[in-house]
Image (cartoon, rainbow, N blue to C red; front, side):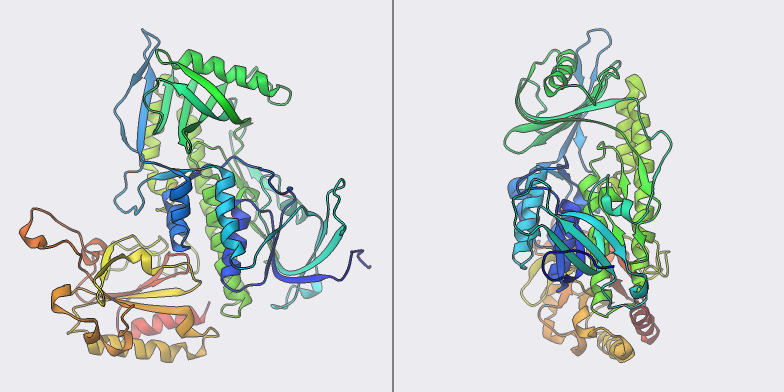
Amino acid sequence: MEVPFDGQPEYTDVLVVGAGPSGLMCALALARYGVDTMIVERREYGQIYGNADVIQPGTIELWESLGLREGLMREGTPILAYASWSVDEDSGELERQPQGPNVSLRDCRYPYEIALPIENIEGLLRDDAAKYRLQVEQPWIPTDLVILPEEVGKPNAYTVRVILERPADSKWTQRKRTIYAKYVVGCDGARSWVREKVGIKLERRERDDQAVNWGVLTFTPETDFPDTMVKAVISTPDRGMIFWIPRPDSKARLYVPLSSKVDTRTTSRAAFLDAISNVVDHVFRPYTLKIKDCDWISTYKVIQAVASSFSAKNRVFIAGDAGHTHSAKTGQGANAAMKDSFNLAWKLAFVIRGWAKPTLLVTYEAERKKYASDLIAIDRDIATAISHGRNNARFYKKIWEERNRFITGVGVCYHSPLTPVEKPSPLAPRLTPGERLPPAAILRLSDWRPRNTHDLLQADCTFKLLLFPGEMRYSVTMVDSFVSTLFKELRSWTAPEREVLKLFAIFSDLKLWSHWTEAPESVRDPMSVYVDDSMVPDVADMELSTTGVYSLYDIQPEGCAVLIRPDAHISLVSPINVLGAQEIARFLVRL
């Protein structure tokens, strides 16, 4: 049957549906990796949809690997402190509780959240995408999607046909397009059209429809409340918990529980604002808070759900809110969405470029669906804490501290075929396969430039192999033999191994007594040789201790080789010998 369209059909490797943070991250990563990508959005230009506004430390690391963190810092507001308040039962007035850091983790390179509006997040991603000649095409509404059964088994076939149409009231000349794609990624939100079209169901969890209506607004505060520049959680015995998030330009966002009598379907904007103002006036005593210049106001109920599957026939995938929905209390929406799509993007790139088998894509669901289920479990715990009456702030803070590594995104651990050995190796007991590599200070030996191990993990769609061989003078033969064996074993890999696998050597020597030209020949490159040292002068003579990378990772005297995935997670920790080289080569060849 012929499908009507204006002009000729178009072909692309990947069609991304939806241009929120998830879709933009996916399309941007693919474009950077040289994959032919198209991204479409049903919204008109300038139309804002969504309310994400906090970037977590783990996502900041991702943006840093893309070279985009400076934009976040320039346009956003870092949140370093956490303030807890409660209402005194006798006076009915707010009392400040002990403050603390918002993020208190030793292995967190950026121990803060960054608050900025969704339009800024999307704008930064769009601006960078334009550098790779990638533009969001909008407004285009998908109206039909078919996975062509006769093409599914052909790796390079354009297997998915999608019909796009302009909105009914659109004045655009071209009204309809037919797109043939090898893969489609649905990043089109909680009410995902793509998810529904391929028959994927949302599976709601217990207590998915909480009784509390939440009012959310962004505004300019006029107040004498002293904690406007930090994250503040206010606990009340009768009104639930109020969350205060500072935002750029001296604005703030409030999350306020509303009475169940407030009908979220019929209540007007003015009535919502009055309802929120009434709660604020009651709770903030003895302080005053006037809500001025309200930029945005909305309400929602907590819906906790995970999709039954994250893919259809390994050709159509969903990411972000299309795959999982939850409350906003842990600030995970855009963060989880961007991590979903980045996890998928590098795998799509490897498969499309012929560097890995299509079975690699199965690991996307194995890793991110498990993450989504864990996220929902934490979200449920948060909801329970909020319902604990007077003690809710204490319970909330306890959960926040206990699950901080997961919430911040720095403690996520993947279990899939990409992590063949899940337990830490005795060669480096503090490195856990499946987790992202912890940040650690190192020094580039060629110019004594202080660096971080994360600086070696740029998001360039390559695996990185970090060698920790100990002292340089004792490791020359060991390293050269290891590298020679590794690349000999990699000859059967379909990828250009010296382009897709980057080597770095980090020695235990001090900078004063070594030179990069003395490194083993196989790794002798001014940009690839590092030492476990710093630029702090005369450390031994000062009352100051520094933790080097060998100590931080607990690397044993025999050394080790650490294979890092393109998304900075650890795949293997192997010995620096022939068997270790063969183990790493075998892993890569089998991708």
